[in-house]
Length: 511
Image 1: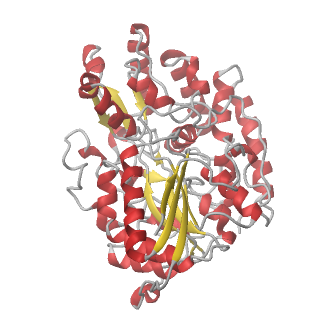
Image 2: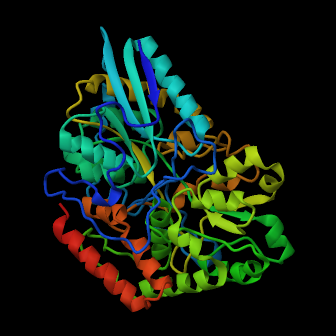
Image 3: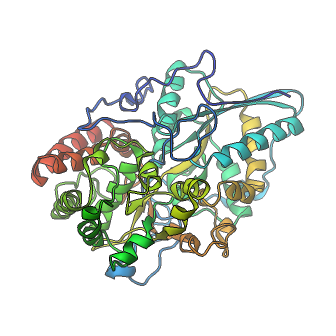
């Protein structure tokens, strides 16, 4: 058995310079890449994260979001007077398909005999300890099963472009851990079916949350196995808030008071308004919290031109003026992390990787950082989450090996969750029983238990279609907001977005 863990392209494979905005060229089935020029430059994870990433890892942070929530949403109104999204109203969204219990009733994993190989492409985790854990697990698993395992880690936001290059070539890794909630829909015709395994895992571990099914179950056929989603709470400086007499942020509108109080004291806040994954996660969620969306529940009717969109844009214009600095216009996905770690930021919206990295670097600063739930808007409290999902490509000669690896990996998923220090949120209900490991043990993190009740992903309130994936991967929504804070009116920014969205949805009609 030979195990290799790489941080860059393998020999003979497509190099990283393929741009995300040139996404999906050559995928076939009409999936031609869109080259929409963003208003602001994408840093694309080229800068190191605030965490000390593994060797040659320059990962950035999470990416995207679509349709049904990870858990059943509460029936009571969310804090701040905002109603929680009706997460369970559409238990299986358009394209989700129905569960197939019979598929899992007699499932047994493939039996591996002889020598095999398995190559995996995945992101460089924002909690480096997880990559250390995963690489060791894969090495040990390979030794036990007589499989030569290769794990390649590359920066976040580049998985889909590398996968697009491999699809165009018709060869490459056996498996990839896709990053966006819509990515499986984008590449579904190139991925092997995994329905039997998916239904078995759901049966064994308390059932899949609706979010997982919406991402990977396409018309009753599972084209991937969801691994985890990434939460986006508020990470704030409690010491600064207390000194200014400020309460923890509950709503998007609350942020303006923080900006007015703390920016003059050299403690502005920030969230990315740039062509990067974190910006998609933040600004799409903001739209939804205000009752706006770019597409209707049918997954094809463009709805961006609305009073609710204008209200959300006008809020961001105010927040940018009162609480931020222009650097947010050029942030990559590590921008949030670096900003909080610098001691400057009063708060950010970010997964807990920023919290974890500061824990090992600056104990005093770490002790001052607290966490509150995702902010609410007038209509809802919604969090737009990236969903990491495993796919096995049709060119792979190791389909049985990939399936056996995932079967065994989920049997020890709790260990993987612990290795992520609570970063990897579960998509199987059995893994969210409280108190959860890590999250249930830290008083500051307990609020993150069950945070999936607010989770949606790209395409909401419709399904995570290929068109929704293109909206995500070409940063239409961040570009709209960026225009609005750099001189365009809200109406002009909306008109820009409407034109881009119309073009995308004409090229990728909903199935």
